[in-house]
Image 1: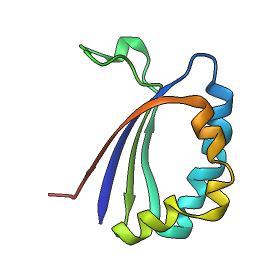
Image 2: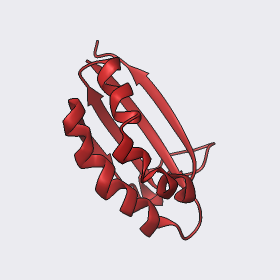
Image 3: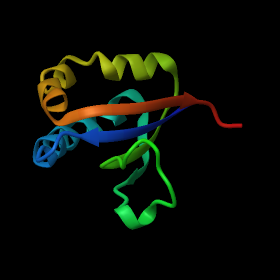
Length: 100
């Protein structure tokens, strides 16, 4: 099992486009043994401190294997919607790990 924490920073005014991508991508993860464990949208009052800005969303995701993750990332139907992700996301911080 691998775990991914993703901090997602959006371009100004592109929230609807991002949510359109997520509406498709999140359910697709199940096909590849992926699961959205947490999907957080913290407000500015949630932060004690930050030197990197405030992400729009924080995702904590699991996949049963690296192969499943790669298959999800390269899924043709997901790639047909990737332009929505590229249009809406300014940057991401992605951390992969395993449960200890």
